[in-house]
Length: 214
Image (cartoon, rainbow, N blue to C red; front, side, top):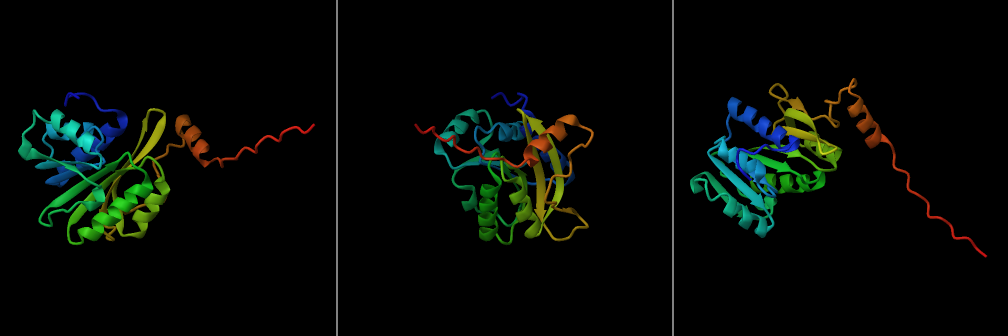
C-alpha cells in the first residue's frame, strides 16, 4: 500500500481520531495491535504522527510481510512484534495509545485485562473499534473506571462500526462515562433507523421441517 493511499471509512475515522488526539496531547508511543496488513499504521508513520509506532499481530507471516512494506521508513520510528497483544510490556515513563480494531468485544476485553494487569503503573489509553459484542465491551469499560474521551459512528461496507477513545479514569470532569449504547444514532436518518431496527429485532430460529410419514 502506498502511504498516501486513501483508507476506507472505518480506518480513516480511526486515523482522524488519532490526528485529533495528537494535536491536543500527543502520545509518544502508538501501538497498532491486531494490525493485520498495517494500512492504518503505515499512514500514521507516513505522516509522522508519533515518535514510535509499534505494529503488533500474533500471526508471524503478517509481521514478515509488513517488514517488507516498511522498508522505505526509518527503522528508528517503528517496531514490529509478533505476539499476543495481551503479552505486551509498556514503558512506564511514556504515555501510550493502544489501537484495537477489527477484533470482537470479548477479545478486546481479554487483551485489555492482560495489558492492565501486566502494566499497572503505566498510562495507557485505548481506541476500540469492535467487530462484534459492542455492548459487552461498553459494559466492561463502564464497570472498570474507563471514561469516554470521544466516539464516532461510521458506515463501511454495509456495516456500522462504533469507534471509542477511552482512558482509565473515574474523574468525569475530564471525560464522560462510557454509555452502554452508542448515542450517535440520528433519528432523522432513515439508514440509521433501518439498521437499528435490524439489530434490535430478535432472531427467530427456524424449526426444522418435519418429514412426511407414509
